[in-house]
Image 1: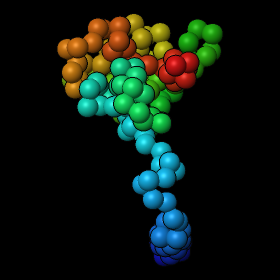
Image 2 (image 1 turned 90 degrees about the horizontal axis):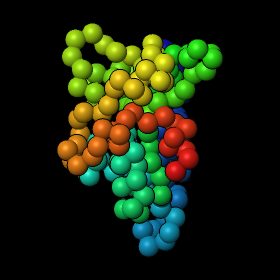
Image 3 (image 1 turned 180 degrees about the vertical axis):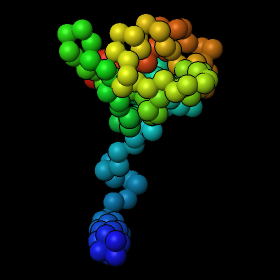
Image 4 (image 1 turned 135 degrees about the vertical axis):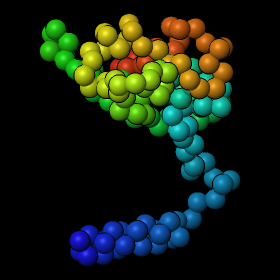
Length: 139
């Protein structure tokens, strides 16, 4: 355990030294602005509208989490974009946890929608479907 602490401390020290010795000013175009879970000021997190808003606002990248679904009839798994391991928080579900990894992509897509987040009333049910990684990569 001590060895892990020392290695972690050493790595953190290296990161700090590298950052202190990196000469990047805000006036140079070396800064990449990343929208965490999309531009959530105007749309629910990890939704297609949040990703589109991030692009319109000038962000160069979007950070998102992905989770694998269950295999479909053809044995194919997909990746859905969602921060949590369950659908509960974003889809307004209570009670038993609903895990993406136990549902096929088709089931998630047809049955669940994002129901919480900023300006939720401004978007259609179709716009608030849980996006797949493939869908977002096509944009």
